[in-house]
Length: 202
Image 1: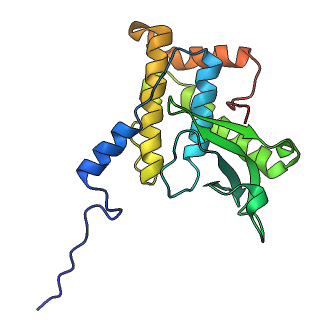
Image 2: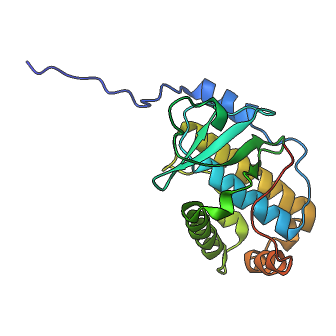
């Protein structure tokens, strides 16, 4: 007789009710219309943080710390000064989740002197711009569902997508969200001549 093994349909143990509760808990609050640069900076910065490795549910108003370890971003609750032996990677900056479910980062003062950080951010920004520089509507590029992400990152990406969509609708109106809006936003954002990182005062 064969030994039948039962494989859980959801190995992370997230049933439907907890998932719905988690989705409700990350509903964007105070999402508002933003300038093209601010909107894309929020989108890019949040994509950077949510692409990092972490296994906890981020909370509003808590400081988190972003590290780069061998081309893998890591989000940690532990600040650089608290590591006794060695850092888990190159320290980039202090992050915080905002009420509209976007992320902001305060980069450390010396990050631009580190070629690894500069190269990795440049690659990410180039890929981000390329993903928007097409004839699709920006709504089609929002991460409502990203199967490649872990649970909490996927939850955050969904909340981010809802936030960006709300901000677009508030700023431009539903009728203006046509297929050429991505290129229009990119053009306006780069006329501002600022990096695509949402900085904050920590």
